[in-house]
Amino acid sequence: MDTGTTAPANRGFGNEHSSEAVPGALPQGRNAPQRPPFGLYAEQLSGTAFTEPRARNRRSWLYRMRPSAAHPPFRRTDNGTLRGGPFTETVPDPNRQRWDPLPDPPPGTDFVAGLWTLGGNGDPARRTGMAIHLYRADVPMRDRVFGDADGELLIVPQRGTLLLRTEFGPLRAGPGDVALIPRGVRFLAELPDGPAAGYVLENHGPPLALPELGPVGANGLAAPRDFVAPHAAYEEDADRPVEVIAKYCGNLWASAWDHSPLDVVAWHGSHVPYVYPLRRFNVLGSVSFDHPDPSLFTVLTCPAADFAVFAPRWLVAEDTFRPPYFHRNVMSEYMGLIEGAYDAKASGFLPGGGSLHPMMSAHGPDRETFEAATEAELTPRKADEGLAFMFETPWPVTLTAQAAGTALRQRDYDAAWKGFPRHFPGPLGKDRP
Ligand SMILES: O=C(O)Cc1cc(O)ccc1O
Ligand SMILES: [Fe+2]
Image 1 (cartoon, rainbow, N blue to C red):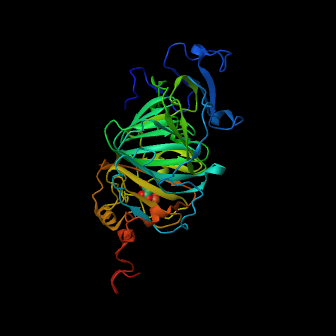
Image 2: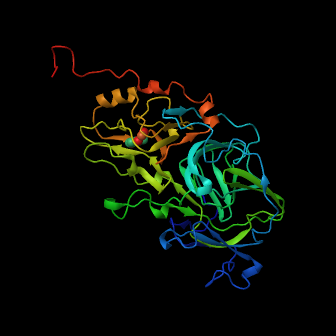
Image 3: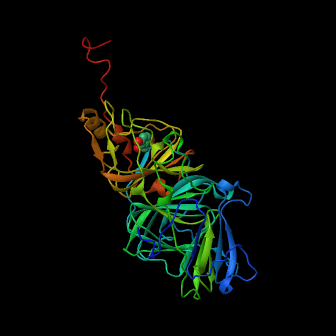
C-alpha cells in the first residue's frame, strides 16, 4: 500500500490525527485562531452531532485556501445508474440471488459515473440503513470531485487501483485493500493502473467502527494501527474550474466551482479517511471443532451493517463440516469476491460478482461443496483459495429495478442446492429406526 508520500504513515483507527503539507500550516493550541497561518481559512467538518458522546464523536478541522462556503448553487444532475434509498423500485424479495460481474463500462466512465446501485435499506434522509453499489471506471476523475452527504463510503476494490485524492490527502487502494471515506469528505478517483472495478457499502447511519473484542481480548481481528490516514496534500493548480458533485438524500447535484475543493494545506481531527489492507486482518477461528459464526471475521461494524472478510486461514477443526454450514438467519447477507474462490461455493460465485441471501432465506454450501467437505480427510488445510467479503445488514435489502432485471442475474441460482439425496431413514429393512 502506498500512501503517496515518503513520510511515516499516519496510522491508527479513530485517532486524533493531524497533518500539514507545509510546516507551520496547522494552528497549534486552538482550532480557529484570529488569523490562521498563511492566510488559510479554518473550517470544521462534523461527521457526528456536536453533542455525540466523546467516544463516538467525529470531527475534523481543515485549513484551506478558500472556505468551502465560497461556491455557486448546486443543481440536480443525472443520477446515471446510481440510486438512493428509500428503495421502492421493487418489492423486497425473499429469494436468494446471485449476479455475474458487471461488464466493462461505456468508454469514458469515471468512478462517480460508474456507480451502479444494487439495492439497500433505510433512508439517507433519516440517516438510517445502507446502500450497496458496484463501480467500474475506465477514466480518471480530473476536474470532477465527489462528496457524499448521505453517508460514509466503504470502497472495496476488486480490479485496478484507485488513487483517491481526498481533501485530507491521497490514499491508494487496490484489490485486497479497503478505503473508508467519511460522510461529506470530498475526493476524486484516479486510475493509476487503468480500468478499475469494485464494490461500495454506503452507510447512512452512525459510522463504521472496530468491533468490540470481548473474550477475544485486547488484540486480534483488525488492528487499529493497520488503518492508514493520508498526509495533507493540496492541488498546486487548485485555481481551475472543477465540477463538484454532491450526493444528497439519494440524488446527485452538481455545482461549477471556480476552484478545486482539494485545497487543504493542513488538518487535524477524527473524521478522516483510511485505507486498510485486508490481508493484515488477524483471522481467528476454531482450533477444536465446529465452524465459527462469521461475526468472528468482522473488520468494521455499524448499526446498518457489519463488514466481514473471509481471508486466508488454516482449517484444523476435528470431526467438523468445515465450510460454512447450512443456515437461515435474521440478517441479510450480500457477498462479493475480490479474487479466487469462496469455500462455500464450488462454482458460479465469480470475482466481481455478488450474492444476496435475504433475511431467513436458507443457504450455505452448494451441493458440490457439501459432498466434497463431507468426504474430505480432516487434515489441517490452509484455506487460501481467495478473498471474499460480506456486507451483513440487519434489515432486508430491496433491489433496484436494474439489479432485479439485469441479464447478469443468475436465474438458476436455486440449482446450487438441488439434488441433495434423502438418506434417512435408509432403505426399508436396513438401518431404519
Ligand atoms: O453465507 C455465507 O456464506 C456467509 C457465512 C459464512 C460463514 O462462515 C458462516 C455463516 C455465513 O452466513
Ligand atoms: Fe450466510
